[in-house]
Length: 229
Image (cartoon, rainbow, N blue to C red; front, side, top):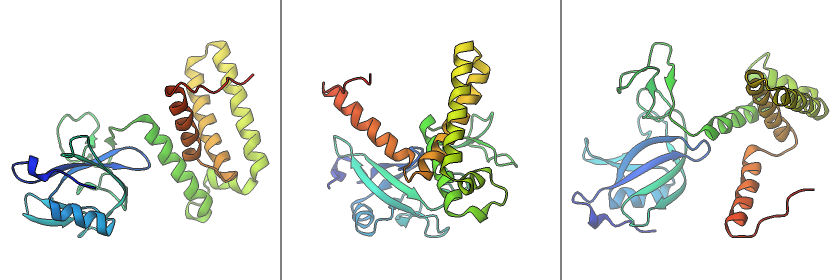
């Protein structure tokens, strides 16, 4: 896998770092040839720091390393998309992404005291984060005493399945009655309980998205699947 460092006056190729699970853009860094090779060899992101003028492994001080999932040079080989699994916050301010800003802010000011920030990310990323949290509650039910999700898992698959059915009916009722305000809330409940059902059944959001992706590719290729009867 090659990058064309010679295209850049400083021999540095920009790297866009994205969370492989949520799709959120985390930061921008730069590779020189040595940093690029080390990143591939070690499976952790190492950049060339323009301020320090040396190689810099992200997380070398904080422990918040970026584990590489995959590397994707662009068509001109002068930019690379880096999909990662972050081990903690990416930004030095303690936020998930370097692009997060305090709510209402239009600058790079520090987060508010409450740490409430606006996170620029695709909507699917929130579902992915919720799916990961549900998986954590399933694996470590004692980590959050009183967790509703943990209680659902304790009650078992039949109870979870019934909840999905109940929420589906309530969602349909609001849709047919034109209750748009209620529809959003019921749909949110349905999505949440469906994610719990998937995990309880040994599946996940990623499995569903993979199937949708395969169908989408088939449709684009002109191989449309028959619609269900």
